[in-house]
Length: 211
View (spheres, one colour):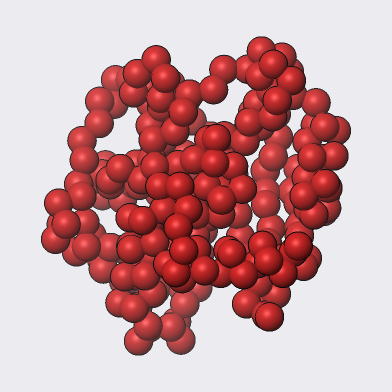
């Protein structure tokens, strides 16, 4: 089961198979991997991420993927992203990939989220800049909670799916080589008894690429 899941995820990240709203995310992730291949030896440095940002902005401009949003429709924000109201059923979230070593890592996190939690899938609709900071804009279904989230139920749900609580609200699936962090009660909402994962932070470990 886990090997099948890993193969599915590897195919999604490589662009060989589809996931909800994944096409444009896969396209940009592939572009970034190819455009920064020559700088792989400095990956993890500020210089690498700056080069990657420049490449990404060239892609955005070439494909007319810049977007404007109404900043007056601000709802809330956390350490990772800002939330704006789009309409009664959707929100827009701005993320500057601050939690990630690279922009490509952020895009991979989106693909993983859309695979595991398709009911709250992120749709990448463009990018914007504010004060020289680059932000991805994703659209997501607006979920309202009907009751407080029981974090023990989150733990049970994650364990059932192969993710073991490693510390606080962070989880690890050793077989898949995936870390999922920050699943506190503001990032996982409960609506009529069902859990909705609205904000996730996925990371891949070295184990992910092993057969």
